[in-house]
Amino acid sequence: MPPKIKTEQEKQQMRTLIMDAARELFVTKGVEAVSMREIAKRIGYSATAIYLHFNDKESLLRAICEADFLSLASALNDILTIPDSLERMVALGQGYAKFALTYPNHYQLMFMTRHTTDQPKNHDIAQNNAEQNAYLQLKTVVAAAHHEGRFRQELTDVNLVAQTIWAGMHGVCALQITMSQDNWFDWCDISARLKLMQDVMLRGLVRA
Image 1 (tube, one colour):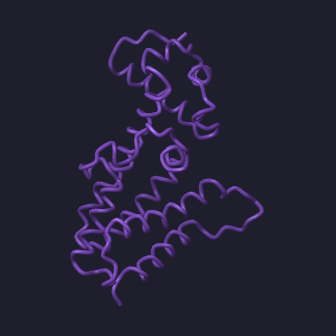
Image 2: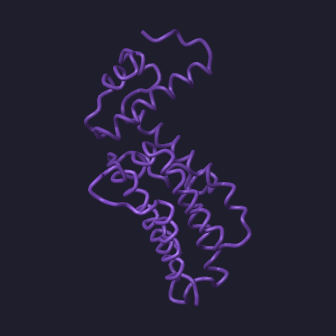
Image 3: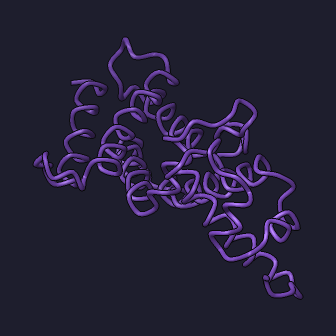
């Protein structure tokens, strides 16, 4: 049985314990395959104890996603103060990759796990607040570079550029998270792969 929750701090600690266990199970088994009872068993509590904090699995998943998307955006906020737009864009990609590789379970649930259609996506959480939305941060940086005339003339769609940059960095991070331990493939250093991906994208985007 869980200890009796007495303070708000203890309540938050309990919620974090539940969310951490659920995140790991969602990533390893898939959201649909995991029950609240299994999450409770993972932390040695009863399912009833979890329902005191989350109404159901969907509300638990939503809470995890909201917390993790906010953590990612918060980790990137300071980068937005870099004066040069291209340097800012590069630093944002590096910060994104650092988060992904430091918190692989968070990243897999955010961007590599199928959610049900009513679960939050990044833009649903803080659609107009760059401090809470990592995609909006990227789009803002890309828009600044576009406004300054830094991109090739034909590249006029800010969303297309931002989503392509995202896809490139995501690909490197996803391969590292899911396949870096596979002994059948001789991976190059992850830092070198991330740098080359950014160099290739910049060469394709920026005016000569």
